[in-house]
Image (cartoon, rainbow, N blue to C red; front, side, top):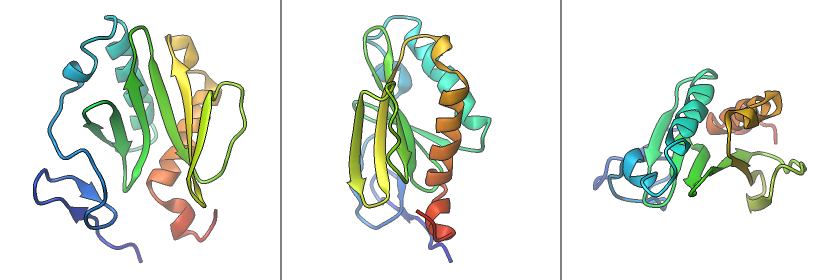
Length: 147
């Protein structure tokens, strides 16, 4: 059985555990991408559309990044001047030269980061990453007892 999400009494954020760290504030995508070149925000919107093609998602702009969540945060972006850094949470480490950074946050939680500079970056491999990360966002690996 999956327990209900805790809701922050200050900002309304829904999180897996009470008092889990989060950016307790209200931010906008326009503000977050204000220092980026004009093509970067539409490129990010395409990223969100691709995620939504897998299933419903909550998009949460924060102070320095934007995260996407189903039950937990599983994908996101950090705006840069001419591109954004897309991040994915996987239950396993995935080696790929497109990932310039991989971080282990917990035994079954790895953050993978890749640069997105044009629509060409949204290839079939990228779509596979979205699907795998979305399943992590649903906590499917925990619900089904798999890592």
